[in-house]
Length: 450
Image (cartoon, rainbow, N blue to C red; front, side, top):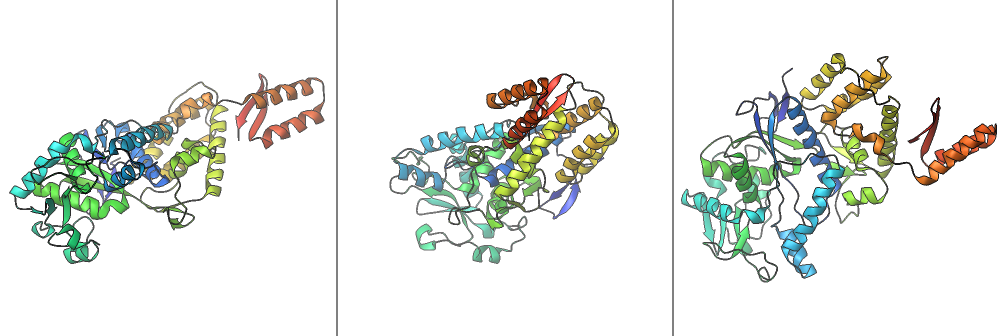
């Protein structure tokens, strides 16, 4: 079955046909590393990890690039506030980010380019845009002239006048010609040199603008044209729109990217996540509250990637319970793998090939578990699904049972041997109250997390 995906650029589902046969270039906008990653980041990286894994399941050779923005106004502000360098701030949160990806079951990218390592290439790219008269210098900064790019707005469907009115900017401060023009190079401000946030350039000391960074890094690692560019839908404008303008202006080639894929908005208790609303939830907070990060992944698989999704702590508790139940069901299948059942595998492919319908694909796991197939065939088919879903179902035996629970299980077994069934039932209840379930088998008691 042909894979069809929704392309933001054309506003329709299209059959996936890579530029270069079975080779796929895929770029995902990564984090700006000035703080811990939040739940919106987690959802974005999880859904695009699943998409990447599915492409690989279809035997595509995916060159997956996810950038790390380590030069940005937010990092500079944080470094000045903490009296340190932007490298120390970005190194700290880059390390945390990469550790979080592991916990979320996300496969390592082929490359994690950092902006700070591409300053010379960025400067050359800007010089090219100036030479082609798409950019101009003003007071030691450089701006892209959006009026020179004829198709500006083709991704977001914003006309130039709308872009101007939708761009809030202090023109006196930046001295650019039009509000919609965007910075390619920003001149240094007081204190930038002390925190190592300034580089020499033909226009004076400064740093790159945000949009130019992704254009340069994707060009260096994937070429002037590639297959998939992905990110959260709030990046459609202005970030991705500006990437298209500067990239196609520089190369003279269109399209810069063949397929644009965007994930939906994540809300917290029905509201947009923000620190001002005190509903800003970080990935470390999920772990601190005792939840499994793979349960968070399980939650995000339950909504279509383009749809909005809401998060509440009550929902997280319910999903953790559902994830634990899934693990327990799979543990009960044993360890002997049989045949992958084509009927279910074909249904799985059918669902995901329709614009990555993960909720329907995930629902097949329960249908499979309830089927009359042998346990060994169920296990083989589920683990095959998990090559795409990424829930680490092949590692479930590594879940540890606390010593306290083990002791209660032994105490219960002794009560059963002594024919103290009332006492055994009371201990069973204690075990369940602590979040575990005990099952009696011919081989003895088996314990699962609820």
